[in-house]
Amino acid sequence: MSDCVLSLRSMIYRTVLIFAFWTFGLVGTGMSQLRVVDFGAGISDTDGWANINSVNFSGYGGFPGNSAWPAPIGSNVAGSGDADLNRVAGSPTGGGPFLSSTSIYFGNFAQVANALGGTLRVSDSTPLANLKTVVFQVQIGEVLGYDFYNPSGAPALKVNGGSSVINPVFSGVLDRYQSGTFTSPATGNNEPIFVNTWGYQWDVSSFGPISTFAIDFSGVTHSQVYALQLDQGTAQFNVAMIPEPGVSWMLLSGVGWVLVRRCSRRLA
Image (cartoon, rainbow, N blue to C red; front, side):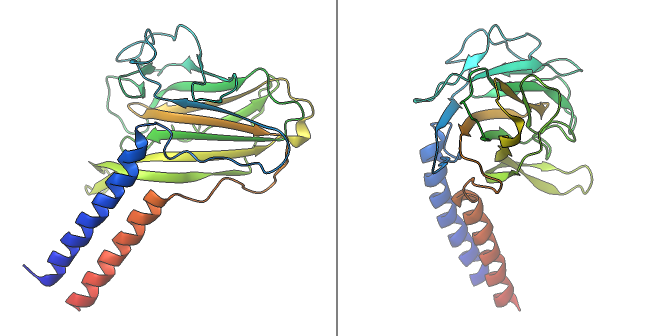
């Protein structure tokens, strides 16, 4: 066996140990990849949902998820406010979001890429007075390369019961880790499957007094939601203030590049 292969094996092994310690030492809380949001000024409020599963919340359906939820689920992380999480709709082909033993699961009997699995809503009927900034994070697992239903399933904010969607100041993946692979129907190659932590930020300072707001998002069938966090503040930001992408993503990406470069040099 070549020195290059042995070196690659050694580096991969060490990296996996580091990543496993970092990831699994924290993921048990269900909030590990969500960012702490510091508005730096004004008044702020936060709501978090962790360990939203059938063990902690009974009566929220079973596979494939045909049943409506009996009631909204209030934020359950210590120090949370009074925002709610609720099911809005199931999949048009049957099934929908239900609470499995580990997550909120978008159930369905079919296995089709980018199929609408249902819609969830995070809402607050008692937001902060003089609200100016809303930040939302959600940790969601991909299926066949999709997490939110494309093109209309990404988190959408509406205020005061209106129908107009407010454009975010920022949206993007804050962190991710690979949970498996799938065979791409387009290329036939094995492609990675990720659990992504998405972040969204909105400036609502121009909408006057806000008495209520809601954020709707739709997952693809068989996707899973592990944790959510809603932050709101009276300070205004017209640029992104969510912290940069996390260690797990950058660590694996960086090490992968080092491995390829090192092997390329030795084989050249």
